[in-house]
Image (cartoon, rainbow, N blue to C red; front, top):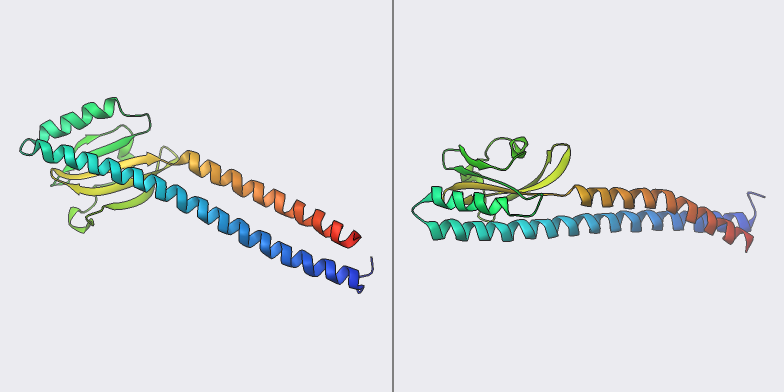
Length: 177
């Protein structure tokens, strides 16, 4: 293979363009998948927050009865549903098992009306947590996203392994042509 031949230079140029294209598309798709996952999970958390707020407002004067009803509903909720409710003083009235890893109660005065969402690690697995103000104080609702993170990791490894192989095959085919 003559490094100065037009054949080699064209192949190398097109391989470079193809490598940049693979990288840009791979990163773009990864970011789009991640953003879509976060948007979907966040939308689910916000809809659950609306239900909790409505229930707590209906109960009105007796916050303990509202919290008791939420605890009963938590017993029949889908597996992996986590939440905790705190009073205005920052003391937790109820915590789903495992939510202790979410840290201390956020400052109620600093929370926006729609709530604040962050990703925390619970038992070694990522969980999206929505913290918001409710009539009795504060609520935090969490959804595990470990399966989504595993999907992103699988995509990453597929792209990292497949892209160089496809690039090599395309370059060999281009050189041969």
